Image 1 (cartoon, rainbow, N blue to C red):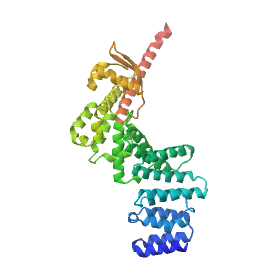
Image 2: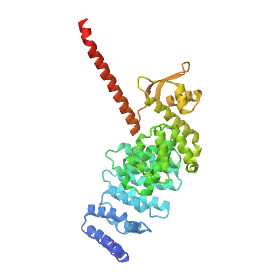
Image 3: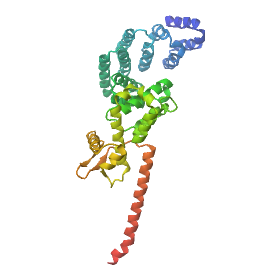
Image 4: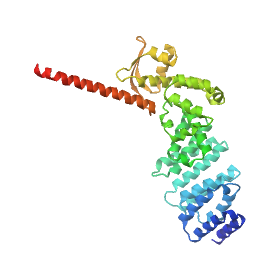
Length: 387
């Protein structure tokens, strides 16, 4: 205890602007108020002034080590994650984190799987940063198994797993997998807790992956998430409008945006490399919107109507329909003789405001038809009884 207090005293003298913080830490430590000390430490390590140099590394070795197994072990894992970022060498950071895992195992406490998994994900992040994708993947697979075997898991543990998973897929340009992992990360993370630059980068990456990811044809979930509004009012707002065009299957609007923002799109290699895929996707979504906009009793659609709205030939429309059928977006039958397609089922989607309004109008029309049918039946009833 004496060593820890002496360290805090020396730091208080060396950094007078942090004297109140060090006094508070010393007071709580002496009184053995471990929970309150943990809360104070959380606030302290978040200060910008202690993020530079090796302040937190020294704090750990000279102070936190004295009581690390007496505090909440998941909080210890959180501290370890922050402290590891102050190591200049990634191997040194990994070695430090592996030492934390050994200490966690040595406590033989219940529910140590959570802090261990959290620390492992920090190690996976360092492996990914130094180019060891294989080691990162191995830790992610272990993490997935651990998560599946646990119950009542803390949100920060889920978030750490899905964040590292998203970054692994991003490094491999696996757009669909990144999209799913990043959305799951946001399910366990408050957008407000993220820094503005981080939010903008994540919103951009999510939008890009939604457009380029295989078999992602529903953008409603992303557009309904507050993260996407970060794009509005920025230099990349054009991406928000392209997402809106895709979600509504508006081919004309998409082509217009491509003309207006040609310079911005040309600066994105992923867009240039996947131009044909994007055109195919917007055509499929245009097809989905054509089907959605028709009444349920009128689902036999002439191929010529689809060709007109998608600006495709009849042959290309048939290919488009086969693609939609193959990825199970629709179910139906193509009649090449009659030049029509009968659609019996459409994959459910998260609807936007415009689509909900359209559905509302159709429901109003249906209600009116029911009322008309009821009036007709009531008018004919006396005659039926009389006969």
